[in-house]
Length: 287
Image 1 (cartoon, rainbow, N blue to C red):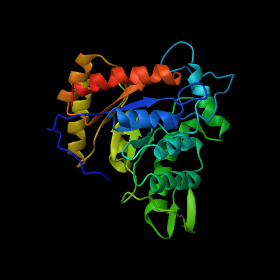
Image 2: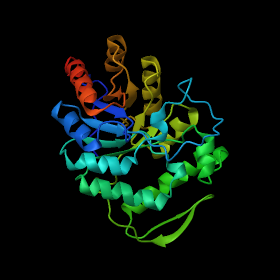
Image 3: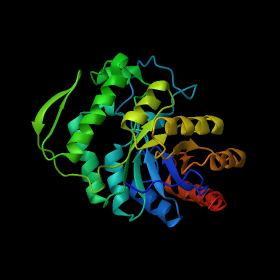
Image 4: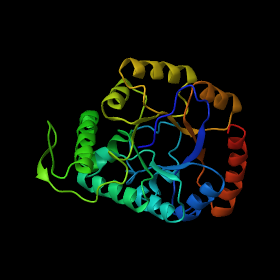
């Protein structure tokens, strides 16, 4: 994993978080465009499907945007982006691991890390769409406990020649799983969410925090101090889905944030490239 920077270093990296769909720019073109403009990362959202009869309210309010049910598989899309880049960090923001087979995920993440020569950031969270979870056979009431055990299994698969895990929800006798990731001990795990459970998960299982952009800078500072009290002063922060308000960006920099990802609207290629030019100019002011 990359070396952790001092919280007193006010330099921020900038990336993009977005939904890659069949109606927008291709991920290979997007990845190359980001790297050419000096962005350091690409974080892609995941939803397997959206049940038509959904009862779970959309966290953003109002109608659910169509990108949620048209998004490409993030690992396939990031592999395409990896093929046209050499430095870009390839992140999930967030992978809905509780809806995934944990051993398949272990192989997908390790394969992408191998093919990209060690550029994966595994962003993960519990999600919000209860009907989507249930379609995968996941009980929403235990999703936090399930994710914690899955993260432990992933680390076993990535770091042990003979991995095994015995928990309350998951149980694996010794098994082989290759490839292993290029990054050691494994790709950094970025924990999404701001709840007490998410922060506890961050301390116990995380290598980075992926808070959403509505998190106030004062709360970011508070969490940084709290993490230090837990013996985890090594955790970098990546803001997920930020806007372009300079006052907010100034607050992030003063809070010692290591990376900000701008929320990029899903658009066709020409419109996307034009927007990236605007975002790159803004990011340059903070470099």
